[in-house]
Image (cartoon, rainbow, N blue to C red; front, side, top):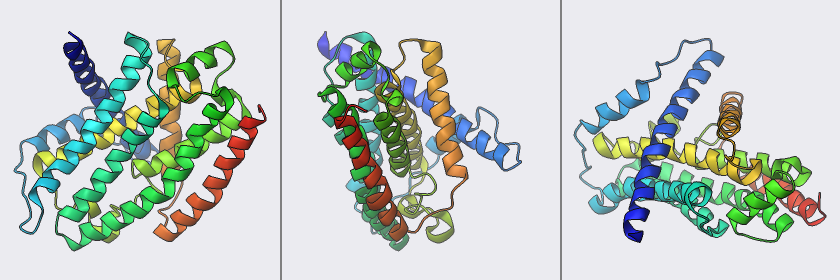
Length: 302
């Protein structure tokens, strides 16, 4: 029975976050279009694109490592779905003791899968993209972890369910100065995880065609796109739970989700792409400094 329950939660996570992620991707495209004075795609466009890709042939490059080439998108999508399943099970079904460290590890896997995808394809542009993605991963991961440690320092636990409960007893993490700073540091670092501007150096269409995924097609490309959509929805949901008190009130929770999504899209559309050296300086400089500052404020109770 336990295995059936776990399978049901994972399958439910795939469906829920897949659906929300695809619609979030459409919202991103639509809002981006309106900012640029364009009409934008209809709401069903991402569904049509995904279905069309699944019906196309998956071409494997001659010089590619076939196993790694095909396994990379699967590993990425499994990690994002399992993360979503942990969020769902810990928030709605039963009091699962899900530790922050598990979330951090799982959220690393999609980036690693992108590096593996580029390195295993045998394409020069993909290899350059893989190198950039690895540097990007090393740059944003430190401030991202520092941002997530702020509530840990404030409440003295790495158990996310306990942090959520304490937010309901006292106030949401975003209501503290340390939490406010950590929230924005985390959001900016998370944009590096999903490869949004200004951190889209690994794909960089104007420089590297599609970068790490330039050789992907058919179902494998569809899985990578779905992974990014699910990662977007899972990441935003995690920020809502971790910094904003969660989804105890569904209507308020949905509004929180939309506000965070709008914030990400606005940052994406008001900044140019950074070079990899600029990203490293920014992430290990300003972002890390503000992350450490937030931890000090949390230790002081602010």
